[in-house]
Length: 107
Image (cartoon, rainbow, N blue to C red; front, side, top):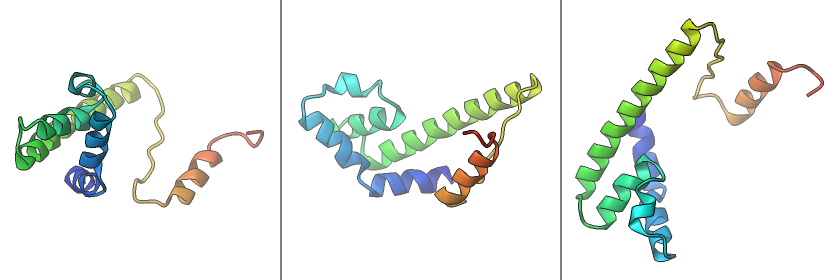
């Protein structure tokens, strides 16, 4: 799923978004710290990586980040925190209804 989501974001214009930020005066060094996508796409735009290298390295970095997140959440659950997982395939309306159903009626 990570690869599909990454490809969808790239096709939806993520590279153009980063190029637009650079065109508006943001320095490449600033973008390197905004997030994984910005870091690798900036390096691609600067010619440091080919598109294939950028996509591959970005995919690997996102997978590593997701693994760290899973580890952190498992630790939180072991410590007694209750985490309510939502099915990412549900519609926004269904997710909203599930979340709102977890809170008291006064919200």
